[in-house]
Image (cartoon, rainbow, N blue to C red; front, side):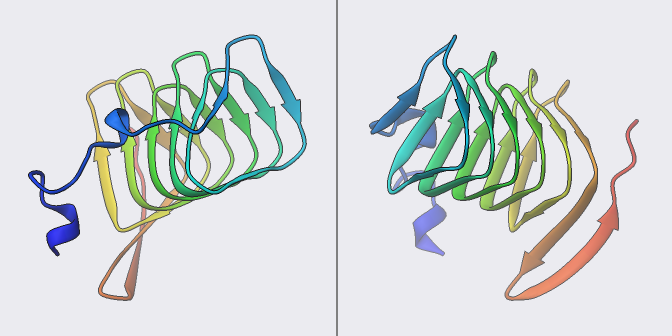
Length: 130
């Protein structure tokens, strides 16, 4: 798919952020946003972002997440449903993941079930931590 080729796609890290929850901010409740969001603070509740989500190193989400693209530098305690998911070296996910594209840097961790789909077919596998 041309949408995912590196030369045509602007990386999520380079997107214009429309919403920012900064370090020290605490949100209790669900968050919905239409574009790109960066979270450095803490959220307790479900998060639904139409385009993309970046969870910074100090960021913590305790709740379920639904988005198109996501990069995790911080901690997620809940389930994630995303088309594309990157777990960076400082990222930690405790919960199930449903995605089509998964990239994990050395040091990044995931404890939960993983379901990856390709062309509409889902294959489930138990994730074993090394």
